[in-house]
Image 1 (cartoon, rainbow, N blue to C red):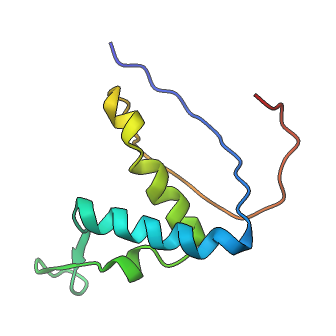
Image 2 (image 1 turned 120 degrees about the vertical axis):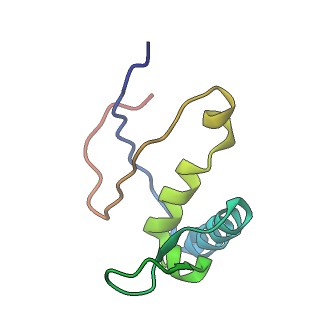
Length: 95
């Protein structure tokens, strides 16, 4: 029986590594295959979304790196959705 969990994670990204995270996420995205979208509204013709467009910023990079985490896949954990926004860190208990 499958169970669903919602996990909320707060991450801190130093500005000096943001570009590196974006580059790594773009490489990962490109190595696993591209996403597709219709070339225009209502079209059945699809185009590949290039890494630079799909991973445009550090927020989308963080999401891609979470989705592509090989450890989760290795144990059969399926990530069905991610959401990322910038904001003030909340007070949370540390693990």
